[in-house]
Amino acid sequence: MLILNANPNADALHPDAIYRLNLDNDGDCLANMAISYVFSPPQDGRQTFSVFMATGEEARSAEAVGQQVVTDAEVSFGTMANRVTAGAYTFFAGSRSDAFFFDFDGIKNLFDTTGGRNFTAPHLGGKSPWTGVDSNTEANVFSMVVELPTSELRAQPEIRIWGRCSLRKDGRLVHADRAGHPSVSSFFNTDDTKEEYNASEPVNDRDRWTDQFVHLMGHTGNYTREEAIAAIDADRILPDMLVFDPAKPAQYPNGRVFTDDVINYRLSFLSAGDIPPTGLEPHTDLLHEFPYLGNPHPETN
Image 1 (cartoon, rainbow, N blue to C red):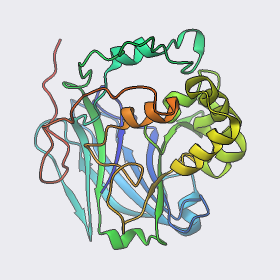
Image 2 (tube, rainbow, N blue to C red):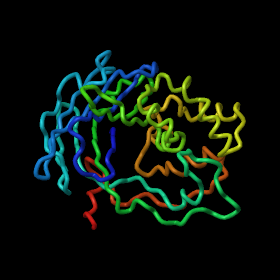
Image 3 (spheres, rainbow, N blue to C red):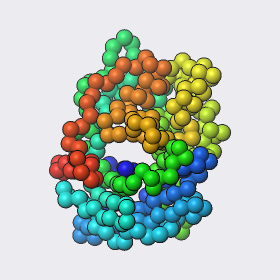
Image 4 (cartoon, one colour):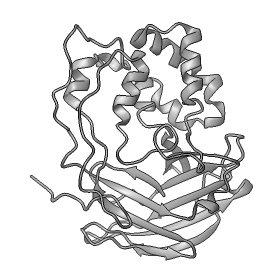
């Protein structure tokens, strides 16, 4: 199952954007398969979505190209999830309960991010920074979900996955956001580098971003350059593509499941194990059937 989340307001997505899942299954860090969602202009509280699937060279186009497998399906903004089947694939787009759990106030206790900086040395001071409060218990998110047979991934023996949002401005597509590993871009980038990072391609990540990652890790975990590079390589966070080997159990960093505490994982990585766990528990509103993410929470004023 593949999930791309966007828009924490969980309302309509941008009609001039392409929301895309990229898959590399041969290890060259280039897309061999691309699943692109596009959306109609919202009208009277409703919106439709279409899905395109591309393979091979065509998958590397920034446009929504390939075979159109879903046409003008209804986006789900309520508790009734509209599932759309095309061959062996099942698709969904709409509002869902956000499964991501984290202690935002605790994060603010740990790091000073003022002035456009990224996450500098944590302020531990012998006292736990955590409040014990999950900041996301009532949060919704807009989710695009694809369920497919594992064999369709054609893993050799693994795949690498990353998401991207591209927005059409003045007639051209601008890569506005991208992510592979959870909480990598948000922790490692500054306000000055985010735009370039989002616009760049994973195949260039090691050459362009290794020095910046190493520099940050020196501050957050007192890593030497050699130690930082070894840790980056061990977790394979550059290139920023989520790695999944179907022959191994799914748990981050081999893919990601809803119950993974990715904030604990990332903070332990950054601090070389010095930051204590948050103590939070996964959300309990997950579903046993597609699209698996819980029903959206009621809107509150």
